[in-house]
Image 1 (cartoon, one colour):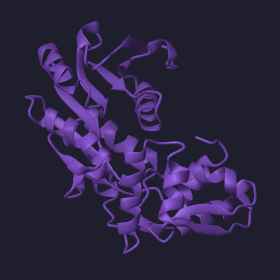
Image 2 (cartoon, helix red, strand yellow; image 1 turned 135 degrees about the horizontal axis):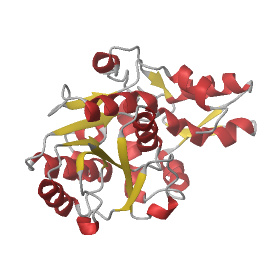
Image 3 (cartoon, rainbow, N blue to C red; image 1 turned 30 degrees about the vertical axis):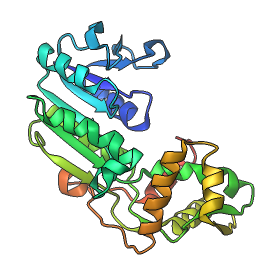
Image 4 (cartoon, rainbow, N blue to C red; image 1 turned 90 degrees about the horizontal axis):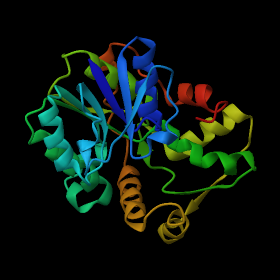
Length: 275
């Protein structure tokens, strides 16, 4: 049984690949740029463009871990059906849960992929994680420089999930049948504001920090330097609503049977390594 992993350069995809490799599974990592993949010894690599899946990446594949990419998804589904793929585990997003998800670039991006997979004849497990704990890396430069940390809606409450919890659930879905045809919303184990996350990180680094609340206009201008404007709007809209908090919690423990990792645990593990 060969398991195809897309997004192997990402935190979750890479974590899934390393976990499955450590337990002896036959793996193939696929990318539009396979030469840039750094994989453990014994892991195959393959070229995969979803819109042109005839490259052979799906040959002999029984299960797929798929990052959400709507461009070419219909062609990929047809190729997966023809190749006899038995299960797809999709890394989607909790953004699809909004009643206006199709009007949001982030929600639409993931919802289009979910719908294409659900129309197929292939059993699908859909993972809908909330905000990744790793998003907090964006605050590190300002914290280490002594601040202030500039943040819109700092009282917005979220339930950030440790990426290893997503990996745990994905591995269960790829290696067993218990999670077949399930859609799982995944969060961290508690609601925590953006401001509190900033202070958790500062405390771990032994720093004093001040948070300066940005106006929406200031945030739009700043965030547009590093992401498309439509995604800036989606994220700011989410934070604006989340100020009413607390965030809904639906942690991985109910799936894995293991206590979900806290944001504080993420900070202890990841701040030193930077990944």
